[in-house]
Amino acid sequence: MSSGTGQHGRGVPTGPQERVLLVWDAPNMDMSLGSLLGARPTSAYRPRFDAVGRWLLDLAGPEAEAEACVFTNVAPGSIDIVRPWVEALRNVGFAVFAKPKTSEDSDVDDDMLAHIGMRSAEGRLRHVVVASGDGRAFREPLEKLIEVGTDVTVIGFREYAGFALASETLSFLDLEDIDGVFREPLPRVSLETLPDEGAWLPPFRSLRSLLDRR
Image (cartoon, rainbow, N blue to C red; front, side):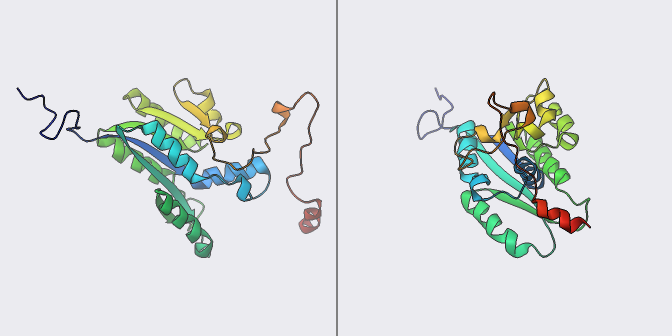
């Protein structure tokens, strides 16, 4: 009597794999990281997407398909700056959705939600990982996914992910807690995390910038 595993061996999957999906909100994550550092990040403080990819593969395991997507805006005149970053992402195995930044309203939130919705409608979406601190755009849709049985994790920076930390259903993982994402520890001293011996809080900008405000 047939076991239903096919003719070429036992345990061969007979149906489509489940999917674990990462959607990365590049504008929001870049803004959050810049606010955290008080300046544009140097190479030591830029996230390593190969480490994020390995983490996602581990989350998916051998039985699920891992899909990693970065959503970004491309401002006028910035193509030559953005191109190497986009190509590096694609070489790691990430898909990139790029959208011209034609106005303040041309963000990528709706595009991210549309892609999540498409994957959910396919019926194989096991887990969604959203890298963003934008609770206004994502909290309600993500909580609805949980209601229909999809696992959801928000990754980002705890200082800017209050919507996920406050939620009773969403899971949160600080990006710095993913092994190897940053080459050096982020300088995250704040008034809420002061050590007993005290700490310096560096200026957000040069004092000389006052001369530019006249």
